[in-house]
Image (cartoon, each protein chain N blue to C red):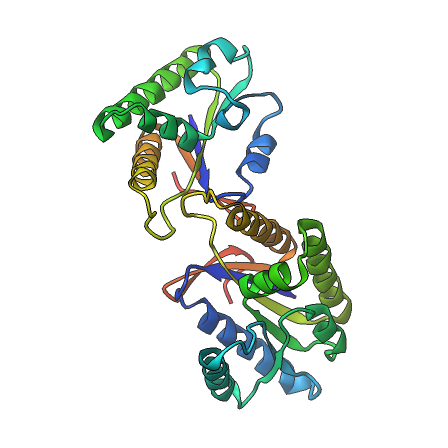
Length: 183
Length: 142
């Protein structure tokens, strides 16, 4: 099952996504003891502030979640997961910057990478929840790099939303279901 | 008359192309001017006008006040609507949502954002149907 969740900064999308993942996990766990709840953290431990933020988030999630720090190779994590695991990626925008700046990916490579995630999810029966950010509704940027970034981000959003079973926009913690029935 | 509004690269054009087989495009991205439509609108086609933020930006360079520019666009929208009714053909306005980012650094960009927002409000007022596009999906707002 594929779920796409997006909204503005501090819209409550991460909490909403975590609650959704936890609910799916608890339900699955009742009958299947092998199911894990995985959190793919895309942020890098770049400086002291990030280390503190990451540690705080991990402690908050400690009870049920297994956190995997993977700034680049999401497919690797998905391939290693048990079938039917519940997996949250937060956030697609951070992963996109990592790939653009560290590995110089182009739009075609990005689409191939995301298509591969979605294929693995379907094949292994995983529940994947992807959190992202609506960054395309401001004034167009004359900076070419920023413009490229938004173009690629939107290409991925459209791809994921098209494949998704659920697409949810979150505003102040309140979900609007663009795709799929409210759960 | 319909308004299709959404963020950059959100899939507005793709959705409009699904609405009708015969579309006549007036696009600022292709160098068209807004007042090209009376000459370029091919009979028995749906008229699509896109790239309004560029037409607004051009007006801003002409050293006019905000109210004058807003009024100019209102008059243009009214003329479009009337011609659409006269011909019995559909008109689709594609507009870019530009109001949900941080405040632009320059005065010109702030004016562009204000005027684009007002234009969208006026277009909503005049349109019979309004659609908001989000990552390739559409929702009818009016």
